[in-house]
Image (cartoon, rainbow, N blue to C red):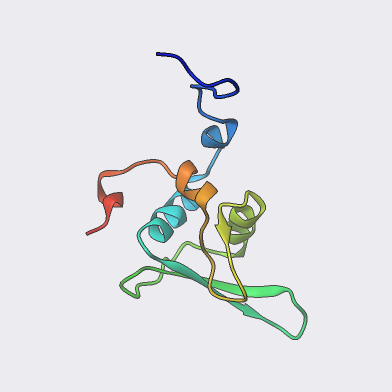
Length: 103
């Protein structure tokens, strides 16, 4: 089987990113349709975040530190001020789990 020039059979370095357990747990919630609600003060800085599952449950161990790590790694994104959701890069980086397939 021949490959096209410039196409590598090896996965990119992005799939081997180090992700903590808290980050991984949040990404699983987001991959299943969850979202991250954020609150701002008068300044554009985010001061509080809440990770909510598709069913409306709140992920208790999600905090601003985890949020900033996910955002810095570009694993989550927000468009036009809407709640944060998992990005395409986040979907690639999240590890597969049996319960991560949805209903």
